[in-house]
Image (cartoon, rainbow, N blue to C red; front, side, top):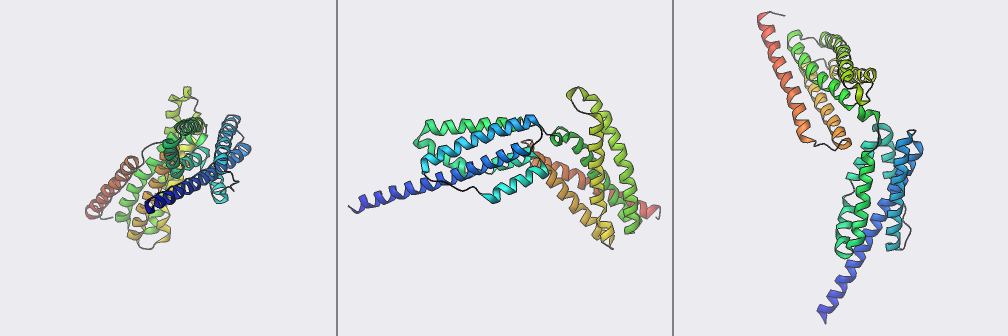
Length: 300
């Protein structure tokens, strides 16, 4: 008799737990419906607007499906709503939406549990989610179209300038002089990289890329990176503290941009991050060694 009561209680708890999961899934779907619907209204690109409206309707159907299961109205997550609208405005639609979809581990676990109970319904929802991912991949954004140009400018600035600043640090031993030399070097190099970006994109013009835009993205990415890397030399009086800060900034830039690209383009994060960090720090170490040699034998 006690065993029977225990089983009844366990079964009842399981039903309650399942309903809680359904409610959470309903909240996720209604929140995502509002996010997609809002982005569809604020985007100016007709192609992206159409895709976002389509996905919004998919999310609305999902929310209505869960509402039939729960029998209640669920309020959307306002914090999540405003956060992803902010990310989409700042970093682009593709990054924000792919980050949002990657974060829904709870919903995925619930669908897997539901599969054991109602395979047909669960598979239907999974198919719709797969369809949504395909639609997200169809979004067209200039930031991602010219990502190669940004990477070209970013990579070269990180490698060339961290190396140059490391060499200048030991050879010149003067923060202001190092900063000014670094800015002049960086500005000249950014123009050179913009020209390289232009010539490279001329070869890809048939793919729909504008050579002038490619040059601008490459040059601006290089110049912004230069400003961040040189900045510590204006802040710290000790040149070695400034160099440490510069290398730390370089790692942060590599981390942030690699994370952005890995999410937006569905690429692996750690191999790309480790490769970029190793090259930048390796060049800096070699340049620092060259600075030691110059200081000792030339006497600067």
